[in-house]
Image 1 (cartoon, rainbow, N blue to C red):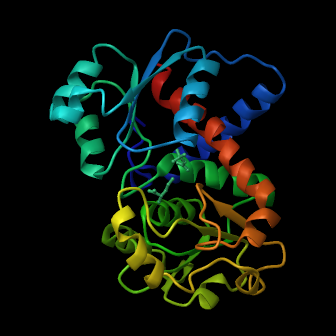
Image 2: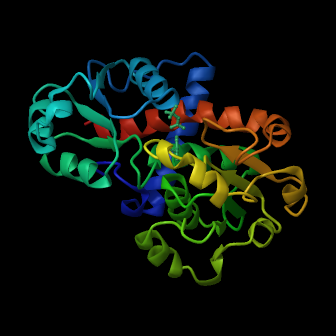
Length: 302
Ligand code: CP
Ligand code: NVA
């Protein structure tokens, strides 16, 4: 594995290896066992969008591994003034040992990886959020013990989170049911991938149908970063696509709730449901740190 650009590129074995390493690194951190696998290595972190979790977990993670993270805001880089991504890739390859990038177009991340001599990690694009979904699957495995045969349900926008969850959860053996309003379906390439899984995948407009017997329910904001201008229109389109107590009563009695955060209470999730599942949701946020450390060790330790 050279880069982490999207989960469509990863095998089941690669995903499970990262999750196993993440569990080990989490154990070691909790027990004060040093793991300086990336001593002296540097990670450049390019942000074209806001971030709390991704920035802090990568920066802390590389430090705990003995390395150093450089926060590179696109506003301050020449990339923000039009320097081509392919030139940025070749320049950064001469200075740092890995690049994490959060941006808009998936093609920008792919171009960066094509021209860089060093590993590139996708820290969120409009198409995918692979680091988040590795942490999500790690959290589900922690709570449920195993992944094979679990029923995963996603409610809401067919966005970057939906795309990555569908691919990641199907790859590790889960059944996936997704409820989105018409016009807000996941990406075509993801639906083509999912079609290969037969009745292990369901796309419906009915939240009630999707949530039936779910072991874990995911949701995400109705307007992602960059879609702020459409927020009003989206609020109307997503009315009814809310994770609330009534909907969860149709799920498995031990159903978990996960949210990548930030959450908009009263829109995609009620405050009541959020707070009832807050431990699971903040464990999920914590696991960003451990999962991303596993990704960095896997890609950058040679
Ligand atoms: N979930 C997530 O990626 O959070 P941030 O936008 O705060 O990084
Ligand atoms: N779908 C959201 C995820 C944020 C972590 C967004 O792209 O803004």
